[in-house]
Length: 69
Image (tube, rainbow, N blue to C red; front, side, top):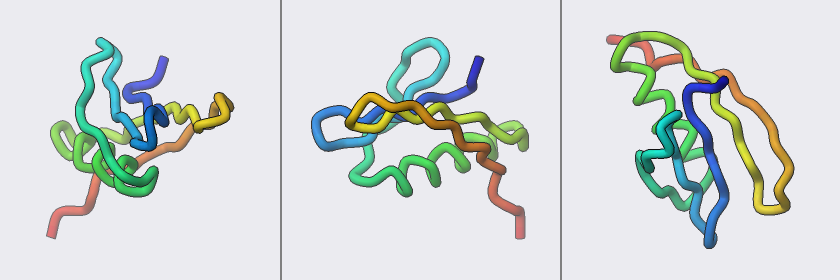
C-alpha cells in the first residue's frame, strides 16, 4: 500500500492520505509531488505516491523528504 495518492480531479491534483483524507489541492502534478515531499519531512521517511492521471492510468513516484539546511 502507498503512503499517499495523487488524483487528478476537476482540473486540480488532490493529495490524499491512506485514510482518504484530502491533504491539499494543487494546480499541477509537480506542485502536489513537492507537497508530498514536504509531508515526508514530518518523519524524514521517503513516501511512495500513487498517481492517477486524468485518463485513469496509474503510475508511482518515490518521493524523498527535502534536505535540511
